[in-house]
Image 1: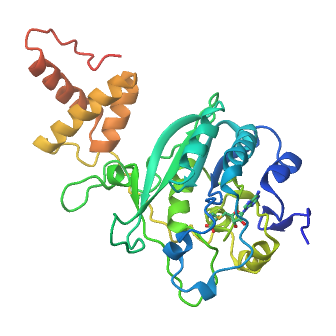
Image 2: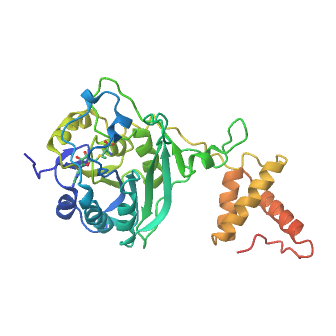
Image 3: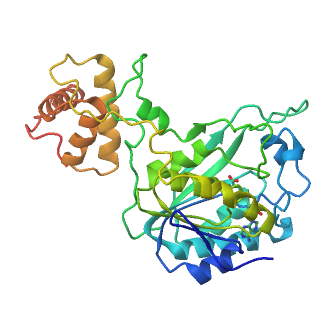
Length: 344
Ligand SMILES: C[S@@+](CC[C@H](N)C(=O)[O-])C[C@H]1O[C@@H](n2cnc3c(N)ncnc32)[C@H](O)[C@@H]1O
């Protein structure tokens, strides 16, 4: 029996109902800050679930699939609804395999939503094949609704000025558009047919939302988005059509504590100007040049350039200005560099 009544747990509203119907009934225009969702992949006789579950006995029954002939229309319906409920500046992440990627992209392009990044989620241990390459990635389409400021907490996981032992920036590595995250194998535990690793959802929520924001998942499945949202102290609303799948996870959600992930997630080191008074290395000069050109190209103001490069390199304003003047002068020896460089 499908109940339209929500289950409220830890400020999360969970509905055992079709997502389009649920959103129309329960979500106002512009009310959601972030949607993270993973629609059914529309492949009936596939081996997809083998990627996720080594032992079929533990795969939950009741998963509702979408027929491939209906996939395009299905995608248009729910994506249109997602566009409506997102606030201007809100973000949408859609996980997709390659089979119906085209239909999802097509549906997205019929809306006002704008692409921010096309991410690739790479995992190891794809299903073994002999006569072709082994699939080891999914797509994550990251879109925004125009008309408002999008949340992007660039230092939510690693500070700009942090360095690994080999001198690399973990902040830049973490923000690359290929995410290497392995799936979770939980032997002996019931799982949704394609349950996402919580690490993956947590990462997107850390970058694209703040505590107290309203997060939504149109296709709850194993409730991974709900777990991450509750764990990070966000509000949550979600929909799942299958009564079996819905029922299977409610007790687990009840047993969670609000903010349970907060003590576990890494705290970024945000100390600024840690390198002030130290000699500039060649690597730092190259990085400054790269950053400067790319920020100028993006139309950043002088203040923004100094702020961002300062945080990334752990340098103060005067040192940065001197270094920038130096490379501008080197590139154009005849130019008289204004002391106020970098200019707008
Ligand atoms: C790919 S799974 C989601 C997996 C989830 N992200 C996780 O980590 O476990 C898609 C889910 O959407 C559900 N579903 C299919 N059609 C739906 C609809 N119209 N409304 C809501 N849920 C639906 C399926 O039953 C399935 O549980």
